[in-house]
Amino acid sequence: MPGNEDDPKILRKFSRRAKIVKPGDIVDIEGIRVALAHEPYELKDNKSIDFALYGHNFKVIEKGLNGVLNINFILPQSKRVIRVKYPDGTNFERGYKVMREL
Image 1 (cartoon, rainbow, N blue to C red):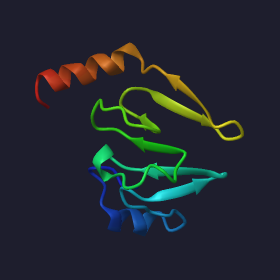
Image 2 (tube, one colour):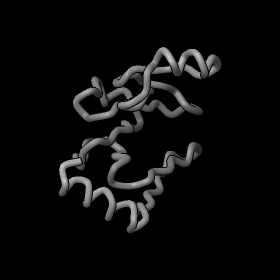
Image 3 (cartoon, rainbow, N blue to C red):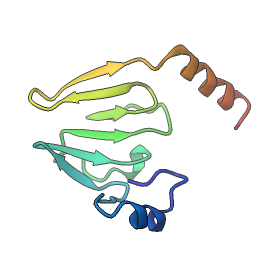
Image 4 (cartoon, rainbow, N blue to C red):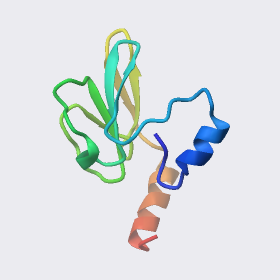
């Protein structure tokens, strides 16, 4: 899924083997159904998925793994999630930018 600053046409040109998905699309990765979005409102149906991956705010939703709050690792065989805290410097810089409205 392209990021906020990514141009899908350029990605297609240079990533011919990659599948580019839209926000809200559901993909199957090793038997795990994952919904992908930038923000939670782009997710359509959380009932048929194992996880929803998103970010851009601090909201927590059912089945959601917010990439702003943690680095999330999904172990495929058990579907166990390991959440790793971002380094303090990363969170400090984010807070600084939020406070300065950048």
